[in-house]
Amino acid sequence: MRVAAIDCGTNSIRLLIADVQGENFREVFRDMEIVRLGQGVDQTGKFHPDAIARTLKAVDKFASEIARRGVENRPDAASSRAWLGRMLMLNDKRDEAEAELLKAVELEPEQLQYLSGLFGFYVAENNVPRAEEVLRMGLIEIQNGRVAEGEAWVQRALAAQAPPALTHVRVGTVYEASRKFGEAVTHYKQALVAD
Image (cartoon, rainbow, N blue to C red; front, side, top):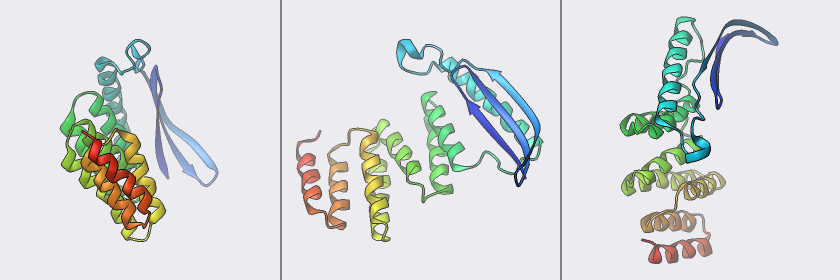
């Protein structure tokens, strides 16, 4: 099977395309671009827009090479979509970022980290109704018998951003559904003092 891997570091981004058969590995193509993604991060704590633009340009170039060389694990995997969504969000391309984050959830809805990323995006955008909609997916996990997964999702969602009052109400509902009434009451009380 022909596969590709992209390694994004602080200074460079690399592409490796290889044919893999069992334990055997044969390099087909290798490329590297200097993108200086870490430009200014020590001073500002944020990615510089120029650094993000350079990185996205390199990713576009690599995606073309991946398609041209017939790679079987195309960059439409959920992790690639989630990573691209975060990069677009940092580059203030909100609509494109949302589309990529939604695609990640669509591709692998059972992977709760993609829901968490989408929740964080909506909270950052101050889009409370959409954030609540994503948070309710944790309740759906519980209703489907995946209590531990649902609770883990809720905790990750809460860690993403400080939630508004309505989010505390939704979290309380999730705990109530899993019969953890003490935790539910705690979140209902936090909803009263939030915002």
